[in-house]
Image (cartoon, rainbow, N blue to C red):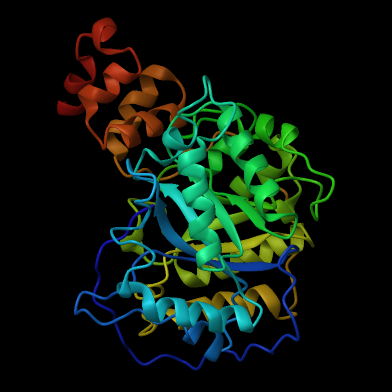
Amino acid sequence: MFSSFLALLSPALAAPTELQPRQSINAYTAPRLVNYVQTFRYGNGNRVSLAPLVDQGTGITHVNLAALHINDDPNGITLNDNSPDDAYYDQTWQEVQTLQSQGVKVLFMLGGAAKGSYLKLCSNATPGTKADQDYYNALVDTIRAHNIDGVDLDIEESVDVSCALALLQHLHASFGPDFLLTMAPVASAMWPSGPGLSGFDYPTLDAAATEPTRPNGKLVNWYNAQFYNGWGDASAQDFYNAIITMGNWKPERVVMGVLDNSADGGSGFVALETLKGVIKQLQANYPAFGCAVGWEYWNAGATDGYASPWQWVKEIGNVVFQATALPTRNLTVASDPQPPAPFQAETNALFGLVGNYFEAVRALNITNGDLAEAEKLLGLDDLLGGVLGDVLSE
């Protein structure tokens, strides 16, 4: 997950449909409307305010503050580049209290594209049977200091499944059954043995991660699956249908993660009107559809012509929570999905040789598009003698 600056646009827009206020939010059941917040200041230095998420009645249910990093010094945890205790975040914490007072749950997203947090948390174990206590204790202290409601585990580095399981078990033991535990795998990793970035099989983890005292009997409340950057496709219902069918997941536990802005990812942005239609279709397919999560808030909706990010969130909220006529169920499954990828030409070339589209996506993700390094990662360099470079130069 990542972001880059894009000047906000402000054309005249039709007034959005008003969202009917809800009396309360059930933090543990669908539908949900989640948004990630990683950018806390605009390019001009002005703060990104979270207050409009409740002041404007967007329907937001959960906000994930990204990204919390475990650094070499156990007491040096940072939220992006600053300590969560830094004055940089003082107003953010005030607004977090406002969100929570309105029933919105606020979580830390741990990890993400910057690697190292999970290897440190499991550094005392081989292959990862318990969390490292020094790092873990500092994480617990940080969560408690800011009255956070849960943790979203975004594991984009290869760890053993026992590492993820141990961390989930530790967090449950420390905070109890009401503390939210979510995860953010790439969408393809939700398939049985599906390729991803975490190094383990999510269905295998979920089968082991049980806890009868939690709301759904599972340690993981739900999964914020990333349907972009070549890992999934949110432009139609087929890819989500495939996850539910092939992975045997309950739809209330799979939230469709999308880009709020075309600049927030390498590929896979879906225009708002198309996205709203897909959400309606999935609501028709699955009455308990887990709904949507957006990456990320600060520039949400600018690609679609909105001047303020809360407007985009509210448009999604109107679809998620308002009773409207739904289309006919469509359970078509993506049989051989090849979502748009950030390095499309290189991805296509690798796919033609390894026969697995998502392995090609993964290799180029890890190497940041470096074709030669991707060849080495897949064991193709010695075998092929650089034939991919010849293919791409034709």
